[in-house]
Length: 370
Ligand SMILES: *Cc1c(COP(=O)(O)O)cnc(C)c1O
Image 1 (cartoon, rainbow, N blue to C red):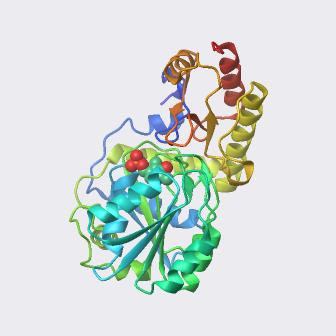
Image 2 (cartoon, rainbow, N blue to C red; image 1 turned 60 degrees about the vertical axis):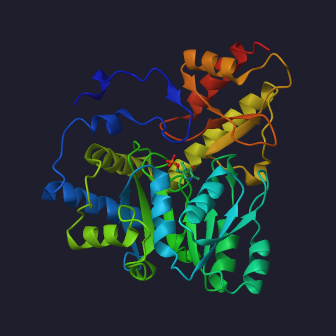
Image 3 (cartoon, protein in one colour; image 1 turned 180 degrees about the vertical axis):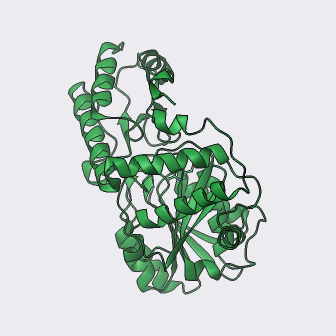
């Protein structure tokens, strides 16, 4: 396959999930696979091993489960499978994804406490500690690593320390950070970490994955509140039948994901990708600040994944017009998602480089119509 023959995308996706993918990743989808063929299942097994490797985790202690659907389906599979009927979950939240996780637990009638830090403050481990000391019923703690709603990077190391010292099972939604920020999964003692194909690994949407401490996962047998989203069952099938999925798997997406993992290795791994994302973010913010924009978050809590900017103060500014103009220039951005301020968001991840951020800033400068 000659990659230069593939048409260019009409715009760069600066929307972290789905995001811009390489031509290699897109080209990998141009053939069909049989879901029960060994060649395909071997590929799934390689992917599962590579994911455990990316987490820096010991292969003996950790395992991977792949799950059909968007990232939320994997979050729901974890929430619905790991908390036993007599368990209680506390969810630390400061945005839409933390709230969604809590909502899932509530829909599943799991005893749930929500610890809300508002939209622009990081999760505080000391608050969690206080609650855990006073409520021995709590068995599970859930936290979002990068809250994509704002770009906030929550201090999961501090949260993990408190949760693990108290002997709780720890669930981390690292959907938008895994693969773009190093996470010492084993060192932090994370029991279940969730991410998906179409974020920092730079694949296309279609499935999520869960890194799980094998010993904790084994306790979930027969516990799921859903058949399709039974984490233990899905894992058991993959283990016993050499990478076989229960039900139809997104074969093209899986093949593209394998290519994305190879390209991550070629780039130099998670550390190198992190450097590129940080450089993207720095180039973007410096350029936008020069044009008079300011960021919602202080640098201390800002992730290299996505950046929220305040609307400019002119009444002539509308997000819709801004969006359309930038789209014509070849860039698609995100609306804001919080209630305390009018913001828009620009993703820094995907097949996107600092020179793209420079081009974007130029496009913004040329389209200041307010
Ligand atoms: C993208 C994302 C999800 C999953 O969202 P989907 O739309 O279901 O893919 C969950 N949590 C976080 C933090 C995310 O960024």
